[in-house]
Length: 194
Image (tube, rainbow, N blue to C red; front, side, top):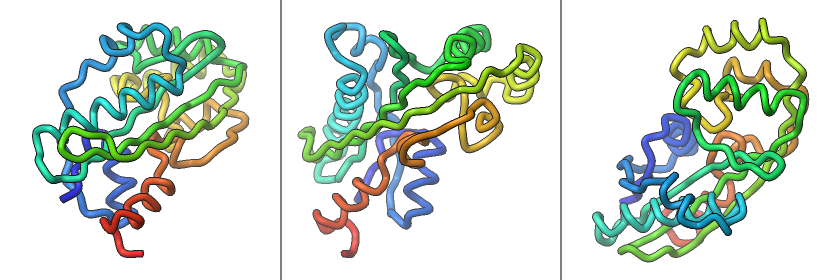
């Protein structure tokens, strides 16, 4: 059995649409606390280590199952962004990113019986356009509490696409899961037909 250590509707939809049979289980990993304990980690390290922690934690509770853990961080200049806690924090993040390029780093790890087996990370670069405050007000009013469900406060697959002028990188990485490398790994391990 394959378990996705995530309750993210976007990650679930990616796996489901790709034909991967799985069940979903929420990991009990305090992401911010773990990252805060390791200030030396670079953004790519944060994404990989959190994906690994989620996969290993859920796999300890589910012997013999293959568990997929994933994480995504937003890196801008010398800062790493997490999911905003509220609309005000979302507004501040979007104003900071406005008119600038930032990176989304997505990582995935598989684990079995509490041991990581494989990991992969990928980076995409996105340039946010110089949107008006009036547009930002309208955007936040439209998405409401959904602004706290993803790093940066946007979902590029929806209304968030209007925030951007340029995007460089893999679409699945932007959505939070390096899907094609994961599918290749699942074929190599016999979880999926090759």
